[in-house]
Amino acid sequence: MRNAKQTAARRRRHPAVPAAARAAGRVLDRLGDRLTGALAALTLKRFLDLVLGSAFLVLVIPALALAAPVLALRRPRGSGGVLRRETRIGLGGHPFELRSLDTRRFRLDLLSRLPHVVRGELSLVGPAPLAPDHPALHGAAADRWRRELRPGLTGLAQVRARSGMPWDEPALLDAHYAEHHGTRLDLAILAWSAHIQLRTGLRALARRGKAHLSDTDHRLRGYSVAE
Image 1 (spheres, rainbow, N blue to C red):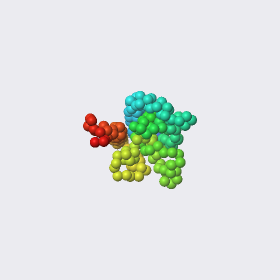
Image 2 (cartoon, rainbow, N blue to C red):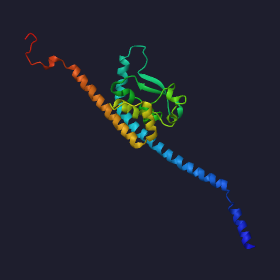
Image 3 (cartoon, rainbow, N blue to C red):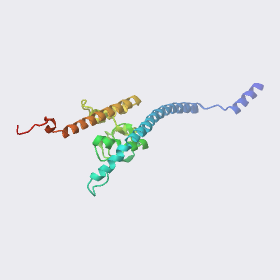
């Protein structure tokens, strides 16, 4: 009799959990673990975007501040501002206005997009930002992973296109990045992008230096064409 009363009291204090509720709890736990892992990866990528993007922006602000008034002075009156404004599709399929300096010199157009990285509309590395009417965003061939990744300031497709390597389709390279992206790949793409930009800038300066030289610069003193 005493045992029966003790069992009933325990049941009142700790009611039995139905099997369905326990199963649902296990499913929620597994989903929570997966979500935590995904959020951790996204947080690390976003952290790198904030830290590196802010550092890069501080470094290039003087160049951008100098380039903007120079561009404004060179533009004809009534031709608009120095910023190029384009609509692009970002994370989750949300459109945003991409602003960049209207110049290709020293890739200042690319560097002027760093504020978008700090704000979270772009990532430092990712697939190319596409216009709303781009075929890859519509129809049966639409790439669903594009909604899950921020478009990038640079990316695998951009690096391959400017590296002199054999050309691949940009869409395939973006898809490859989406499947294999991670911190190591992002840092490698950033390093290679910096290498390409530095090499291109040095070549441009070398060509400009050669253009200022003429055959008269190499003549010996006292040389005359009449001779």
